[in-house]
Image (cartoon, helix red, strand yellow):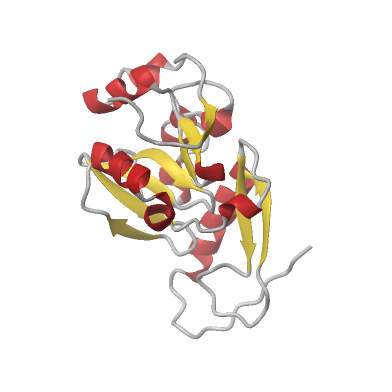
Length: 196
């Protein structure tokens, strides 16, 4: 399968993490044989690659390594493959050969009703709507960064949201902390944020 995505601003180097590559399903091996991960749509989509470094691009690091997505979010299992993320840190994972979306602020899951190839086609046909990343091109988002949003989108606020690029690992750890803190709060609970 060749990549049907456009506006690619980063392409992963050659595969060097064969421990991860070798345990992937065949359709992912086919994808990675043509394109070892990428960033597209001004950072709106990041598909991780089978690389050892940089860690922010490493599928193995987030799936099997030190920073396991399954350790950060209770609803994710070690068998879920954290294939991609959007610019805000929502995760796209493969579970039973279907794409699921982790809404990382709340830790909720969405079943998208499509497999990986359909997901790539859908994003290629309509990236803004599929990824919900309108206006991401306003930000100077570099590889290895995600957008921090304070107050988070999941919180009703009259305050203007501060949106800025930060290190992707820092953003993922914050989202893990946030979702863990608000998981059991009833709707309408007051939450206070400290900003720098």
